[in-house]
Image 1 (cartoon, rainbow, N blue to C red):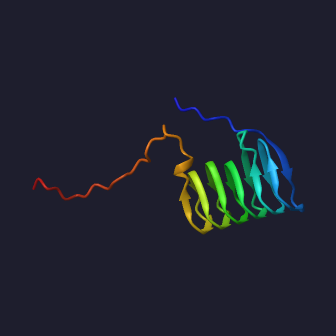
Image 2: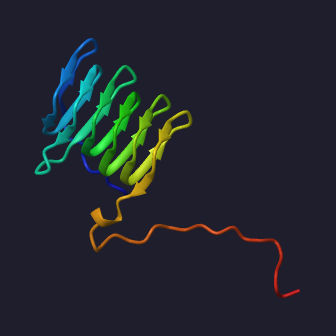
Length: 139
């Protein structure tokens, strides 16, 4: 009934103890366990996933389709399709997303901004739930 688009494979790893200074551009999937001082950007021609583990720290901007964060990010995050914030996620910067999943314990110090301009014209308006008051005008 519901089909999930297959995620690209994680082909690259920046391990614990690694410190990279400079911008990084990747294709498919990247897992970060170390420290990056610079921007992390996926190739826009390919579907991408970026995983930032609880030991990771990125000081720079992030641009990817699907972003999973459980570490620290100092800079803006641009998740074109999905942003998942795990319990130990800490973001100091603005967050732009199409879909957001945030677990208890995750912290964002910045603005949360849905990326409506990224959505295609076939995107349906978000579902808005209203509470039903117990009072009725038919009394």
